Image (cartoon, rainbow, N blue to C red; front, side, top):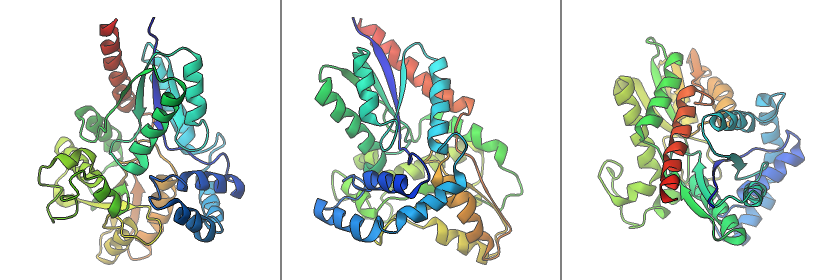
Length: 344
């Protein structure tokens, strides 16, 4: 007899704000070949010599600014999402993190122990990137292929322009937007330009021509930049916000290789110098508030903007536990369950 379940996958966080826990987390995260895509010897050398000696202490200080009594905001809110979704579907729902706790390996072991035969894997990433969506799926499938190769799986595809996702994004953001905002900045998590090019199966379109993201091409199915721009366009169409009132940028750079731009920190400083006074920042590549939204934008971003002449920068919260977002997730699970039931 078949037994179905769903697995929600998110990024993860350190176990605490101690430097040792942050170092362990960064070591696991940055040792991933899909995050730092370089030969293993070079990745280990960069981690040992340039990243792990100093960055854990700096990151631990940043995590302390956003940590809650219950723990990491990302993990705490993800658990809330998990609980709310579980209440709206008629099957077991599990939550795992790609890095940290609860680990994908441990949660997959629990799923297997419960005799699950059909699993719906839901990476909580609207957009495709090898360093987020792809690595989460690969890790889950590695566990399944090793320990439960007969398990049937389905995977939620990137939902960057799914109408229900866009509606949830608009529903959650609208109460935080005001007519007198000078600008709404869409700040997406950045990735190296080479990741975009590696994800292009043709190796002849992405970032090769100036209008690559606007020219239809099969590579858009795995093009992070195109998908971010498509999300923005869909949001504007549904919300009615005019294009001249928005800007797009990319945040969270690491190392010195070229990353997708323009860079959020540089843009915030530029806006302040150019006389823009009131900005709202929305971060659609994150479904859950975390260090990158709460500290990088909500704290450092404010300082970057106001230090050059801006007056007010406010972070638009992620969808978090908004009912429309929970409805999107539970709705996709229920649709998948109908497919599974139809096979019985």
